Image 1 (cartoon, helix red, strand yellow):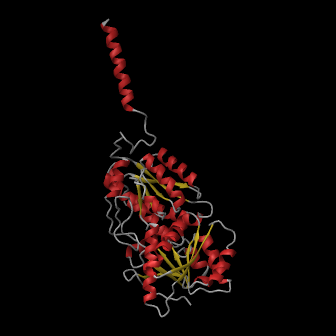
Image 2 (cartoon, one colour):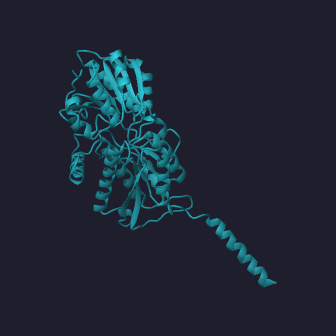
Length: 413
């Protein structure tokens, strides 16, 4: 009788131990009940960008910048607090599709990534960060401007670049300053934007704040980034005759817009991008010099006065044979920020890495912005846009004074 009682007790204890152990984590680290490891031969991080489709050029530039940051970290001894663990980059392609973005985050979670860099599309970043939040997977947004990305109470989402509202406020303040110092004040504005959450959120913010800055919005013209033709938009611009065409586009539609204006019978006194995906893009600068002279762009960018930025730019050009643009600069720094947090965490526990990301205070970096540090929502509180202008195939910062290396030409003509 005693023997059977003892066997029954052992059975109950075994069942309880199994129950308490729970289901094994898909990632093996960073999930509730898993304290991670304090040493490793290799750790993994993910890059989530559009490597194919209409945004492939931009996505590949950003992926390469992440690669460069990873290779430099490995050459510098890897993650020293984890015994010199090497960093392995998992490259993923969201193809511009929100659904693909979510499935790639799930894949990164299964493969044990400790963090993700991405995503160059607000439409992808919104659901992808939601999935990362569910998986407790730190996600550092390099580019993705929609306000809602950091407005949903998520713990694991952090963003380096300015939010849409910040872009809009920076643009209006810069325009006010340009007009204050110009012989001719330009106040009639036509807003042209691609119609996803990216372009729409910026245009709406500019329109809502324009009267406070003495700006008249004479029209708002949305279009699909994949549009094959912008002739209707061009005709409406020509009819309204604004002083300034303000554009928020990606590369392909941005080129079509400028070409269409150039070939029309109307020339605005200024073309200014806001977070524009074309006007600070390296290929637009060099390949479209006949039509891009003196176009302005209120945008995030690399700090052209920084010696560190020059070193990174040279390393990128040597490795990939082309210039690093603003998008690549932000992807590079997002990777540095994530790896720095992993170094300080000294563990593969993703909850500890999230805590260290929140403590980030990076003073030395390559961006035209202040110290990188996040607020309680995960937004880089010192992120800002500056004013760039194209001259002879190059983009120069022309304001504010802190980062300026050339004087602005305004009006354009």
